[in-house]
Structure formats: structure tokens, C-alpha cells
Image (cartoon, rainbow, N blue to C red; front, side, top):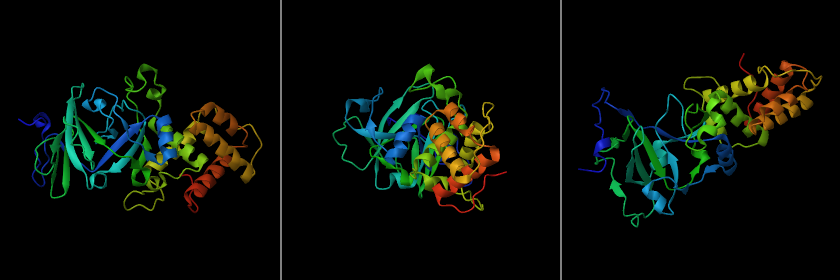
Length: 310
């Protein structure tokens, strides 16, 4: 009996759907906003030492954690999601079964590496094209067992230039793996988190995930992705439509208003929404904010004539 037998899948026949099987096209790395800002500043996700109860915690081997899962009730790992294409990620690498974890929803763990790991005696080499476990490959199509939690350990840094999607997601309301019951992100709406991240990027001149935000939907004339549009909605909802927002100032000139909105974005992106709204209150009206925000977006992305959706 192979160590992965409890998690094995059967590849469905052409045109059929298999039980607990999905095609594997991309994987995600999820963190909290503070960690996301560090990643954006570094322009990569740095591999780190494993600290949990894994067998890997007895080594100095560093990894980046990824998963193919999405969670309808939110993630326990954070609210910011970086997505990477599977086939590009694994190119030239080998697979090793690490272990299964007896969580409430059991997890299978697989190391993905192009390094010599022969000194890690607890690893079992795994060939997705011949072994019948939780991930399999046939004719260059990949499949994974979505009944359980997939946890992939990639033992190298991941460049954000390879990221294909960047967005805020929901946090699990009743659990946080990092901060427990004290996590303030558990109540934050996903598009507000997207807005905070976009605000951070534009106010700091950070272009690390610009290509991901410009992946327009297929057969669309849009300049930006749906994730970008959600982020803009988050900025608008938090800084303009919020019940505490008051437009009480007289500033309307384009250059002055642009500086104020850029400053408000910096505060919002640094998790200071109240202070951001106080700065916005110096503007004459909502229309002034809109014109300034549109100018900032066009400047940041090198776009021409982008307008806030009506």
C-alpha cells in the first residue's frame, strides 16, 4: 500500500466528471495584508523555514506554501491571494510525498523541488504521471483531489512577475491560523482588502503585480481585470461612500486634489482608513475625488483615458 493511497484519484474519461477530481491549473498563496505588503516590496514571495508540526520542521529546508483550494467560507491564512500558473511553476521540478495531516479537513503535502533532497530520508519520490495519488498528469493535463486540502511546498522564492492574479479574499469568520481570535481581518469584506492593496500599490509607486491586474477578461474591451475593478470599488466604498466621509473642504484644483487623494490612498493602504477619510474631507466634493483617482490610476498603469465605471 502506497502512503498516498487514502488520497488517490481516478482520472475521468474524456467528457466525464470524476468524483472529487478537478483539473489543476493554478495554485494560490494566501497571507494577511501586512505580509502582503512585504511581499510586494520584495517583488517576490520568499521561501521560509517550516515551523508547524510537519516532518519538515526538523530541517532548515525553506519553502513557499501553495494550495489549489479555494474556500467558500474564507481562508484561515489571511485575506490577500497571489495566484500562480501550475505548469510554469512546476517546470523542471520533481515531486515528493511529505505527509498527510489529520486536520478537520485532512491535508496532503507534497514537496516540489529541483534541488538534491536525498538527505531528507522521510520523503517519498512521487511521479504524477505513473503514481496514483492526489495529483496526477496525463497528456499534459493535470488533476488534483479537491476533496481534501492540497498543500504544496515549493522550495524556492516565487517572483511576482509570474503572478497571474492578485486580489483580496474573505477570511474565515471563526478561525485564523496566524492570529487566532484576535485577527481583525475576519470581519473585513474582500473587496475592501483589494482596495487597501491597490491603494498601497498606487500610493507607493509599486508595480510588482501590475501585469496581473491588467489581465483583462477574455473577449473583453476592458483595460483591467475583474480583480482590479473590485479593488477600485473597495477604495470608493471605503473613502467616498462610507458613512463617516464628509466633503467639507474647498480644494478642487487637479494637482492639489491629486496629492490629497494620493495621500489618502497611502493611509488607507497602511490600514488607517479613518485618517484617510479625514484627508479626503479636504476636497470640495465626490466628483473632485473621482477625477483625482482616475488620474492616479492612469499615471500608475500608463493607461490612457481610464474612467471609473459608472
